[in-house]
Image (cartoon, rainbow, N blue to C red; front, side, top):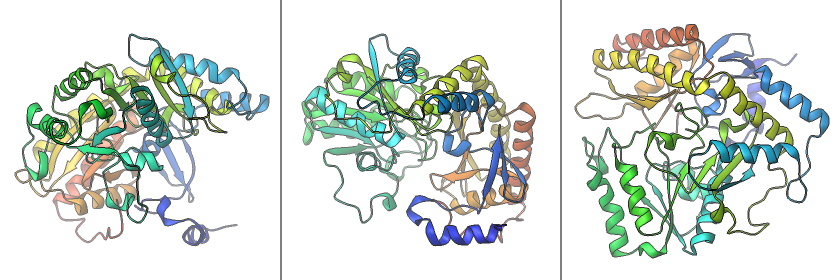
Length: 445
């Protein structure tokens, strides 16, 4: 029988290091609901949801049954040439649930990265304009287009240039910290100023195809925008004929308590990218957009041999049905409010908890050296994650110092309470200096 040590040695030998961000060595053997079980049968409460890819929980029967039925019928035939029923029904469903009072169409890929690539293609094709604008600290994925749209970490771009040209980045309207190292957040107009200056000095607005946003900046630290900023940006874009697109790969499909996270803002995106949790953990992405935009490209400009795989589409339809039938949009909102009530109390009690923010079950806890300077304390955040792992909960730190709290939407109230108790007890240990000796070198982004 293969031992844990033997498997980890094989991983070290054969798994390329660019494919994993290291935290603690959790070797998962199986999972169910909001529970992970490791190679030694130890159970953990999953507060990460496989990077928000398991919104409906691990291996729910509704999803596994749909996978088995479709796999017995047909595992795959490429939609690049032919048709199959699950893809047709899924395209219809996604067009129905995506906000926007206009005709829509959908297309499919394999991961959120290719959906973000597709947004670039469709925006440029429809407008005839070359330039794309995204945000500093953004994460859109790892394909060449998506990585070029991202601006979160130099490790993403080191040694692989040149990247895709004609992509500009503007400051994200962070509601906790300000631009360029400022402690306090800026006003809407101050956050808009760099974009307006860009258009006035070197990037003509008539040459900008699209602005791409994350409503909550996910891997950048679950940053919330200054209220009203996205609405103002939306109006500015449409004033100049610039398309407005949303990367909802992480925040969509119930994560924030709505189908699409734009529902928290008074905007209707021209293009929306979905991925991660779209198929209950199976590899699938989608772009949903205005019909006229989606008709602007001809095949094979954005198709994939194994995209819209019928097994994945069947899993996705079952996932969306489960979200509806089990009221998971409402549950995300309700459980998120329960969690934030507890966390806000921690923020009052501990000097190193600078901010608690988020929507639904997408919450960030910002760990700082002190509340006045808001200096990020990456070491403390990682120590908390490692101690929680020892105690039976899976949590990671992103944006250097932010605890990423994104459990499956199906987490029970009992599991949620237990997880919050574990975090609170671990925070107390950090405050008492009991985690000072933890070695977290080499972990994190």
